[in-house]
Image (cartoon, rainbow, N blue to C red; front, side):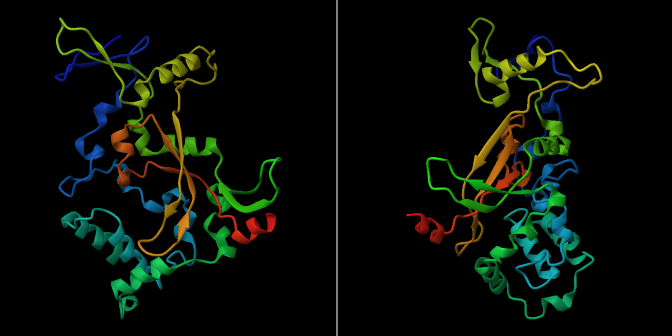
Length: 295
């Protein structure tokens, strides 16, 4: 079955039947781009706080504001580093609602405040390597393990590897509001500028690739579970890993493993304010002394 051709000469062809819903019908320009002039809607993923990927225990920790001196400065610096780079009326509203009106706001905390000093405090913070477990709590689903290198290489254990179970991360992603804009039924996209010209296959999204269509058909070919009335769909898992520099100056860094879902539009997924990256694992650094001891 195919959709009607739009004004750009594009149309979609779905296998067997149309999807139960089209997430593109729920998406506006403000969902796929950032601007200080857009009105934020309640269902936008940007409303999700930056720390939510670590788990709910982050804000309940006693010293959650470290490396800053107190909660008031923490909220103020979070406001400064988040949101839009161009402060607007909407950003002023955030300053009032997310900083000044918080329960733990105390103007006495701001005595002697200097923004440059607080930025340097953040850049120079190294943390306590022995206290890394306080950042990855089991109540948030983090699991600690050790890694033993390949049998053909010198063997040593690397402690402090924290990870989430892959299935738990996928389930969590599909439970968020952003899942309403996941494409769960793949399709082929074609371009035909006029009825008299030949069609051309368009490849621009993961959920329009042949591999996604084949995986979808393979899943549909399995007998359904009689006790389940939900659709059977493919979760297009995308894994990334790279060293992440944490500060503008200094050497503080992490090596995380992120999970993205290809069911989500690339225009939404690549927006920093969408927080589309799901935290899967954190790889610890191996001590140089340990490496030298094996040489």
